[in-house]
Amino acid sequence: MSAVPRQLPPPPSLLLSFMTAVLSKCTVTGVGLICKAFLNSGLCTLQLNGLHHIVQALEGADRNPKQGIVTVCNHISTLDDPVIWGVLPPRFYLNSRTTRWALGASEIMFTNPIFSAFFRLGQTLETFRGKGIYQEAVNTAIQKIDDGHWVHLYGEGKVNRPKNYPRDSHGRASLPRFKWGASVLTFFGTIAHRGLSLHLSEFVAFALLEIHHVFLSVAHGRHYYPYKGRIVMEAQVTPKVIPMWISGFEQLMPEGRPFPSKYFPRPGAQLRITFGEPIPPSVILAALDSSRLELPTQPPHIYLDSPSLRIDCIDKFNSHLITTATVRANVTSVLHDYVEALGHQISGNLLGEPPSSKSSSN
Image (tube, rainbow, N blue to C red; front, side):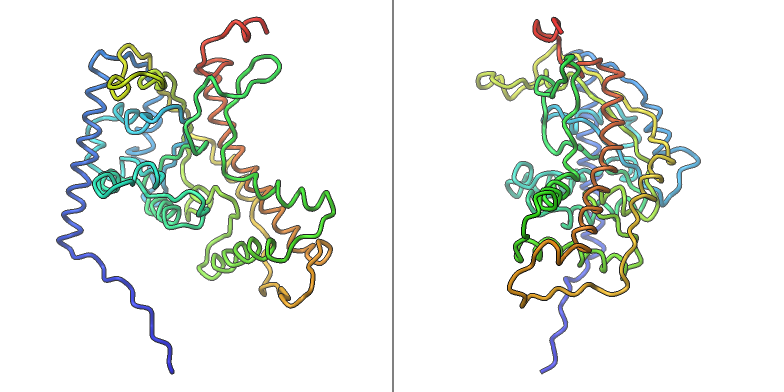
């Protein structure tokens, strides 16, 4: 019996696409204007630095229509997005190419049909925690970059208050690591250093996934950049990456306030938003060049009927996967270090946390 071809969903009608585009534009514009009104209401003070960097990137005469924009920022409160975009010129809200696309956690933002519709219309891609980097939201974000759009990322992956930032022995705060890479290196590095056997199911579950995407990328003519920075690294044209630093937003909705005040912004917050200079293309290209792997011409063979699969039998796979993890960590480090350096430049050694008696004595 011949296989029945998989039926693809029909494309949306022109009327539906038009209505969705209109509703999305209304949502983005409305939210942007509300945020702009709040920032100019006198309920808070705002220090804005480097706005020209993002303006030039988005509407400069030299903008490549196929070069996407990526902004990377620290994440200190639930109000960071969309309030920070209230600083953009109002004309930006009317064009999807000059307003950001973002990734939003399904269990936090897409909790009911109304919220789901609102955030989708607001250019937020539903992301499922635990489903890894090869999910539809990440694929869509890469496609947006390839189409020359702007994608905003919070590298930490969650809210981190400045008071919880790690500090060194001299009291200097550091930005928590970006969760885009080190897990694979830690796993396989531990296995290799301990000389342990790697259980068949553990190896196959990870290795087959990685190998599948290596050859899938090659089949579609893409370079394979095997790390969680897929959004930056798998774009057809290397995107322009702009680091950002924000501070004071944790003062807007501090935790621990009683009902109903906890649902309203607290007046008097001192906000600071800084757009840094774009990361030099040479830095990103150097990371990309060092990350291009020598791909095998044939898929490797894995003998599932083997009674055991010891580490010395999978050296070539182990080497490939450790290289994969190392590249992930190295490229992620570039983005992290530029954001952190901007934070130290703007907010000082404590990255925005007021000095305590303990830190003052160091």
